[in-house]
Amino acid sequence: MSDIQKANMIEFEYNDKHYCLEYTPDSIKQMEANGFSINDIGDKPATRIEQLWQGAFLANHRRVSNTVVTELFRKMKNREALLRKLTEMYNGALEYLLPDEDNEGNVDWTATL
Image (cartoon, rainbow, N blue to C red):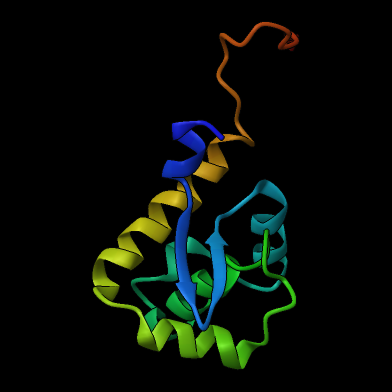
């Protein structure tokens, strides 16, 4: 696993279980299909912060109950920094949907009017 991949994960142990939280393009699509919008965090923080946290479990811990997910969030230290990191991870995963223009193998295109 590269350092870049690790930078886009949160790992911790709880009750003798290892958790690795991350976002993938597929998990973000699922979150959005369920009504999540990162732009709503300022207007609907209680709902959107909880959804952002829950969404981080979709890639690797889909079967963890909402009760456990909520309990874990309440037990996390420094939740303000955690929220910043989750937002950074979410935005990082979005970059995979918009690949770098200079990547070899990308298809060039043109438009005519």
